[in-house]
Length: 121
Image (cartoon, rainbow, N blue to C red; front, side):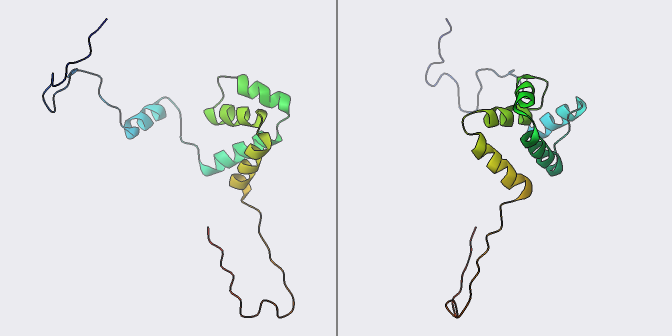
């Protein structure tokens, strides 16, 4: 079994593995994935995927979730829909896909005269 490094074994700025693997930057990973044929999903792609997943019969969704060739979004969101909180997941997908429902306030008479209502997000 390998012994852990002793306290103060390395000087400040010195590595225990100077020839270790170089760190990959996000831009490097993006270029690598692009070279492999993977492109970033657009907002339209994501919304389309959400709205299509919502429309799938559960038997088809189950097949997609089990297929390891599916994109991560399909498998992760599909599993969440099939899990115990399916309604909450679908509600969030709809909010992100088509936006939250408008909240309307109706009034009549002078009850709200000189009243300011402010909505903050």
